[in-house]
Image 1 (cartoon, rainbow, N blue to C red):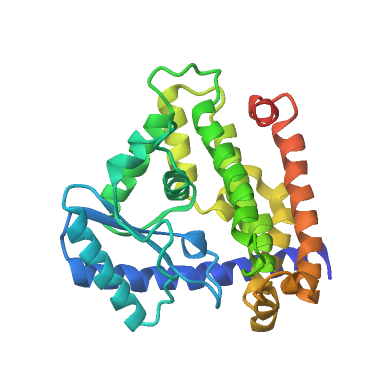
Image 2 (cartoon, helix red, strand yellow):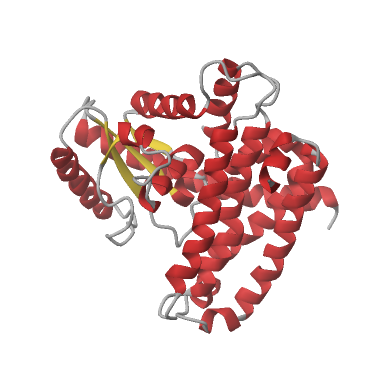
Length: 320
């Protein structure tokens, strides 16, 4: 197959998953509008594969509620009703008990960056909101919250020459947190290791990388423009963010990523990866994807050193 045909094929795959995601988002937005009308006290968003436009046949929906002006208890009641409605129309919901189970006051994302109160739950919700979050209901408030969070990271008067180090450090911290948490979550051998590790090495890594790339685009800009660039890039799904910033030199990475998504969309492959404990690690599916994950990591590294360059302040900040 020629290079041109290969590019066309992986683009077709990525477009397929994007279209699946857009259709699911439209269904959920319609359901929210019908249920909540003109309510303004809360916003609804999603994270995960749906928000990233990578929705596959095995994906569930990571729903979250952020309260703008209202009662958390009432928001929880609205969230429970909406979850039930989504299940009725065929949307697969994750198991209860995760970091998104309870509604959160939107202001808490701004007021708990660092310090003893910034638990894994807070950094996870904050970073996923910023790096991959997508609106379902109350789009104006959702976009307003993203701008406010970016402004928190990019202070007034930040020197043109400086990168957005506050934000970059939090992105790095989040990436290292989920890497460490992987070991915690698979301890004891009762959970599926293979699917978690493959997702860590593909989707989580791309999320981290696309955040780093976004920060890299703010060098040499006044602080207002830094904020505007981040707002535009972080509102763009990671795949398209990488493509828009890196261009054709992202093709190797995106081809491998498309193969990862295609594998997750395959029932038999997913069945092998979801075997409990170490069993999934000895499957052919895991072996094939693990090899591709190494190539994916190498391709991202090449982008860093060739596109940003070893002298770029973002690269220096990653190392020191």
